Length: 258
Image (cartoon, rainbow, N blue to C red; front, side, top):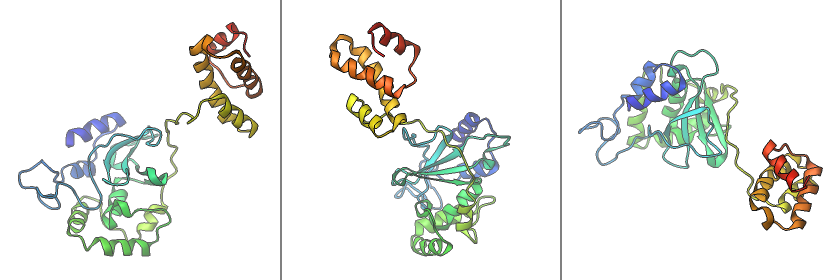
């Protein structure tokens, strides 16, 4: 576990912070023949919907400037450190992003301690947009009925700088502004009809995106593409004026299109 965090810190270009190290040293399934706290041989997971499992990123949703180190185990939710944009000495000082793909939400916490403190309040899955302190209190009351949650919450609060905040809602409101970098998904439909539909709706950016891909597709197919389709492509290219690569422009010129 510690080695994985050391590798993560190296990718981010920072040192491993004492809180991160303490978190990595918490009992984990398989680390001990007699795990303590929330981890047992019968129940190989933690409470609080909190797993240090270093999940794989989701294409077209997980930002490329977030290094994942955990997940909630449900709803595809993940969390990780945000890559630094300025001087940072160690991982404890990095912002933490909680990603909720199904709700298309990203929550940002000022640092690891802030994130773990809210997790210890009512669990990671309880975190939601526009939650009030009353909402958190109700969620915590329900969560405390579960022994696994109680044990995990206590373990998290034993870490340096982590405690259940007086106002977890205020911690959420302190979310810093972050520019996330996400690999954009390609258009679902790549066709003359889709490009024409976007153009007629004055959605020129979408039309251009489809046309760029369509040009490559047509050039690959060559003579298999009917002349009428080449003509229709040329008309759309004239109308939308997408930015094409030098190779695509040369290929179109060779076919007398555009």
